[in-house]
Image 1 (cartoon, one colour):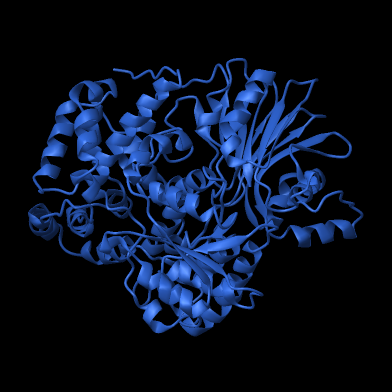
Image 2: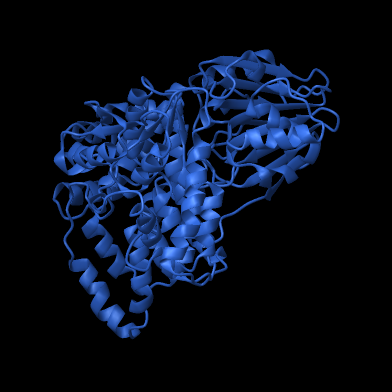
Length: 626
């Protein structure tokens, strides 16, 4: 696990700047390589997890000198792949997965990607044909961003912040990306907030050669809509070995490994499978809160006792909200999910005990765990009602629903569900998962029209017409990589902690996708995974209501963030951001009066203001068109 970067403008000072901005991702070594013939340069900041020796250092050059690899991630099945390569005559000089990946790419090119099990983002430079290949893993666990240069060159990195070390990149504000940020609270791929920087989408590759246009392609994407209608017990028997394999593969490491444990279904299943046949007790970590509505310590203790883990409770730091400005640098663009601060704090504390931690992220997307999935299935039935009933009864009812302004979202979700009853499937789903509505963004940004929603676009691409299939595929391609995986990587790697996500193993996703939707959501949320959990855990754990890993944002806005809102969201600052002050004033008034729950919207505006402030601190002009 590491940080990688490179550029065709490989001057020593530029490469040094790239490395300096990625140093937090790899405290165990730094490497750089330059091709004197082409000017291409690669850099690597190393977090040593497999083969801790110098033999695993990067960038790694092929024995013949033709290929050079800079790689971030883990190939969990590298030992099996190594044995297959040795059987056909390959000989290795290290025990690293990096060398296995390099040899596979030398032999088979992108055709080898389907054989990889793991998470990765890498750059391969072919000196002979002068071609750069960038690749990102199937679901986007590892990040990769790139930018074109004025001379037709290219630069890439694990983080946006690192690319600011490369002169010539267009760092002006992408207004469409800003609109998408206000909708989603993150900027979906392929955009970033900067007009000249783009994210490589999950499951994609990019090819660049001097004098030629950039080409991209998709090598994997999640597909739901399988019609397999086996019984639930049979489906569990098929899925459980796949999950066991995924967890076992994630334990491959030459450093201490632990598990983040919340007490919910996802992390509890991961912890239970880790404990099966383990030579010593699993290490588990839970973050605790003083606010009782957010604390899961009792649930986590019950799971820890059941799996006999070495359990550690890590109290959330006081003043977490004060970490906003530091968080911005890790993302390099506005990011509006405050859970990132919790993950950063938990990673910092857990890193004192382990170098790798398994997490249950992805369980909701893969196994249909979100309340909105239930809403989507119900909405299909509501749409069968006559249009005049939906217009004249449900829409007015939505406007009458009160909302709490303490950061809990149940009433907001009810309002959104009823208010979108007249919309089609894609538009209704976008209305549920987006925050600032199209009308609000149009007013806030002074837009004559709203750009197409990336959520609607992805929903409409799903081949299956089943609502659950469409919602899950959409989330796996947008919300998961753009939100959950983005903050998981950024905040854990801030503290050189590697997170591994067995529930997002592509074999698990494909096994779930082959099953009929009724098996994933037959008896309520997460039917299939709950049935698996009952094989591993006591019923009291399995049937416990989901709490979620969220900060007390409503309380923050009433307390420590109140002064920050007053100081930073002033008319002058809002105008500088290109926002309409009156629209924000109305938003703040509704929140203060307890009439609406705008806590996440207000937080996202604070993040936006903090990002703009950080951009100028970094001596980068931000052009905001009128």
